Length: 247
Image (spheres, helix red, strand yellow):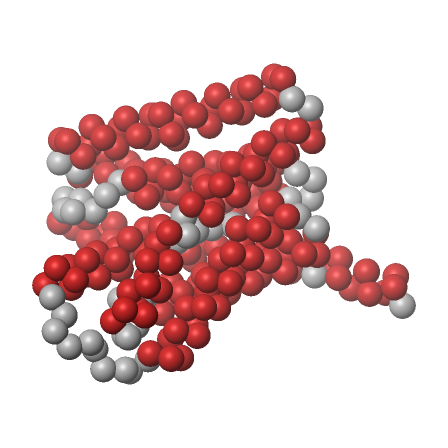
């Protein structure tokens, strides 16, 4: 019975990994509408490049981790796809941002997306054994992924404050819920806490957002909303879209 159960659980690894690739890929593609607007208007307007620079850095380390960790090629492939998406997004900032933003983006990308990951990989490959390399890559993956959860927390705070889900996009919240759940289950089966910790956190936040939707969906808005609060909440949609974390 134990052997049969273990075999059945092991059989789920590839299907879960493939499903995780699909959900993570959709999250990576979420900002396409924003960048289509940038291309059409030939301007980045008030959008910031920092979220995309950071997401590219995060994708790099997940690719590195997926390559190093045995039987984790599915982690590498989807984040390789994500890295390509983020590179395109950063390039569009370099093409269409005003001079000051273009300069800032170039500096950030050069330091965070070229210099820093290259230095980590070179040092790790030169001085650390394989297991230590995996731990270093996994550590950075966890740190960067957890750092990205500031945006969902801000969105949840806004929902509770305004008693309205207007400023928490449902599809993004649902994607966080499904993506986090799939990869958390994958992490449990593969006994990989580097994948489990950030995605378990994402699953928990996604679950909390679904609960908030059930509580506040179609509730009336809070009266006397100030213009400052309205502007802050409108910008939150863009930030949530840009900062959604990945596996």
